[in-house]
Picture 1 (cartoon, rainbow, N blue to C red):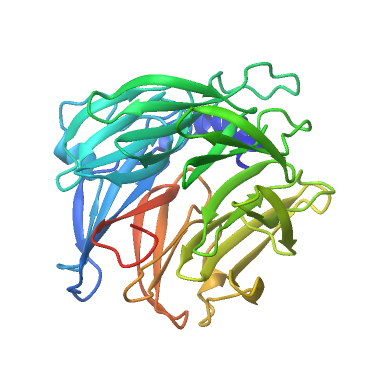
Picture 2 (cartoon, rainbow, N blue to C red):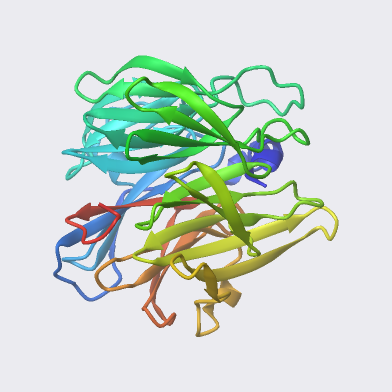
Length: 381
């Protein structure tokens, strides 16, 4: 739905610009301090498209405090602050990387202070992963444009993390979204998201040493997220076409690079913790003109749906549009964000392992992407 409605949101934003809230850096206590190897986590708020309102928040486990808009506080001289639409955030080595989609850049910061270290320039950049000193970034390559005859193929950029320079590009399909690195291969979810109704339905496989596409795997329309499990399977989400082809969860064998099967569950986003795939879905239908929302868990070993609602205390009734998800690998606390109406501050909810709310806090606009700071004990590292 994100691709198809982006122009609508931009128009709505312009009409509401006079009511835009200014995000002032501030710190608020929200929970009892925790002392583990994980010090805290960053939350990247996407911000309303066209408004340069992407912001960065930080939750400190050791103080129990939530810190809003820390990039602005750490970098008061940076014009337009983070920029327009935060799309991904990761830590590699000593650096924090925030992918800012419509500003065509990746902000590189010190992972402890969020102080700016540099910038990587990549047009319409989407997601980032790392391998042996290099960053790999998906790019739509062309402008934001809904066009069924879009002609610009996307690519994966190879970036030297020492110099912040793009050194190679590998063409893939149209509008490539998330990527995952498994062994010596990069997997790329081609969406074709700007080309409604002519969505892409393939995943690109790139040999990481040769940095060349070696194969396309046919999966389903409008692919989005990827995550590899410990059994050698790659889990893939398809948004579907919002009409007759629903969103589904697929998995492929990364040893043979073949599609194995799918589960009959819609997925907007997910987080893999051990063998449990936590997910939510906001499945929009242009036939019923409504959303169906679920909060599920999939056992990736048994390939079974464990539950379609991991929130057990009724709090899901308060969440308008779930938009981000993460699980603490030590405490098993579950974090879910609410984007609400996409043009006002969102909310971050923390649930315990049994699905009961522990606390919630106000965020920036469209809270979406998490990354832990500290030593992790599972595949999140």
